[in-house]
Image (cartoon, rainbow, N blue to C red; front, side, top):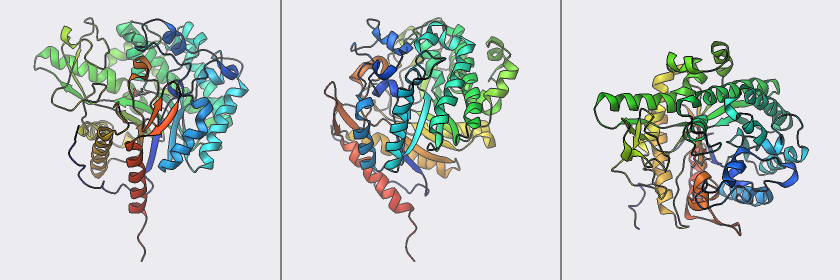
Length: 461
Ligand code: FCB
């Protein structure tokens, strides 16, 4: 397929803007039973027949546990300024509470050293969905105790790594965990609780707030969180369509951002459905953040519940019992994953965040953006990233303070329920030999980073 040429070099981003790449533990590490790692809820879920499309599980990942040096060399070849990885909670605290596994901490210690030795900032996420199995069995995020166990674990990791880590992320995408894991049952732990899943949102937020305090106590540097955002477009013009779109917007975009940044839920009705001493918890949840991470992939078209909407959103069932229905967005190119390519949605979302939160919005880092495309000559990935960087630059020209951009992902990895079928990497991985081959997009991103460093360097004289 031939694409129109890119519209020339990218505009200059500010000096100091950080060019990064993201990944997560469950999707890459493998070595699920090695060196004392305990099982996670995702291990158990993946082992159930039919959960992951190609039948794969987390036992192999991309072999990152053994090949991290090779991957750090790839990052260095890219000129990446930062690598966002996640720490596997069950590798560090195998039972989720109690004894710490020294070999688990040692792994992240080695990884951080390796990154630092190459001048790459290590940016750990403490929770990217792999809840230790004993905690999941005790209710997972439906159980308030999980939040306290998370704070203990955050302290443990920070005590070991805080001397070398410049930037922390507590939790990745609490909305996906709540919606896909507890409301719709598409992801681990496979619960289909619909609105009864809301306590999982509250307890993740509480876990975040407690972890912020634990990290500060351990003198951790800049603390943030990675929240997924998607500008919502209304399908249809009935009252039910508008209601559905607004409700989805609240549940997806504001249920997490509002408590974090304003200390209140978007609606009293949500607050009333949350467990525990909600008003006191909100004070913990809104503990000041140094920065706010945004994961952006595409906008969402939402209207009244509609049977034809089933299965249209990346394969996720939206059951009729929910008062909204997600529709396929038409009129845009689609990735091989079937997600629409809408770069201006990134700008819209950032402007929307600024409009909503004003001065309460901390500096932003784009913690994930990327696309699932096949092939090593991945011109369409290049066009995707180029378009999103232009949209990001435009948002920054509108006055939004964005300090970093992380591509999802370095390597083709285990894409949750899609298995190895969706390839988001700048580097192709041949599963299961795990041989890595940089794609065209890898070389393109390397050239972008080089050019940007040249552009941001003051000219002589
Ligand atoms: C995000 C996840 C990340 C990856 C991308 C494609 O929702 O945080 O792990 O799967 O989607």
